[in-house]
Figure (cartoon, rainbow, N blue to C red):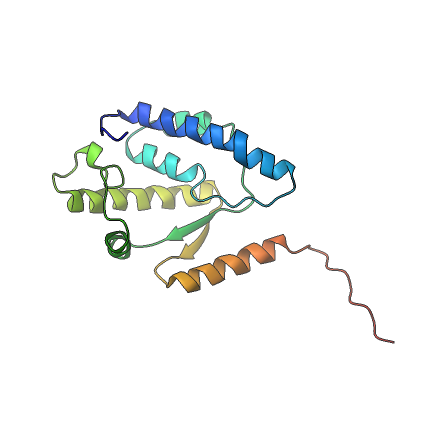
Amino acid sequence: KSSNTLNKLTFVLLYATDFADRLEKEVIPALKAGLVVLSGRYIFTALARAGVRGVDRPWLRGLYGFAIAPHLVFYLKVDVETLIGRVLESRGMDFWESGMDMKAADDIYDSFRLYQNKLLREYSSMADEFNFRTVDARRSIDQIQDELRKQVSAFLEPADKPAEAVAR
């Protein structure tokens, strides 16, 4: 990966293999132990990245067919301009996150913009298929975190709360 020479299918299979390993060694044992597992990206980023690179979507769904269906999926939806600002403020743009392998532009900034716009369309097309709960990620980190905490807490609360003891 660091040599930036992987073709799209090798890239897809590398990520699927890594995911299968993490699922077997981390996620499933945690679930069996009764823990709640929170996972960033899960299979959805891999599906979106491969989809925009032209990998057959039904084949991708089959490849990741072993994945456990999550109870909740949050899609932190953001526009490209906000995303560019955040990426530049944090780690900067890299080859793969910018879609430079797709050769849509010579400049990493232009490539990032084109690639991320394609990814946003791909995520939007996946939203109904995978029941994403869309969260406006243009807001502050604290606001996003508050909303995520509220939604997760509401999901984890028992549907039938026991009646409060009646004061005598």
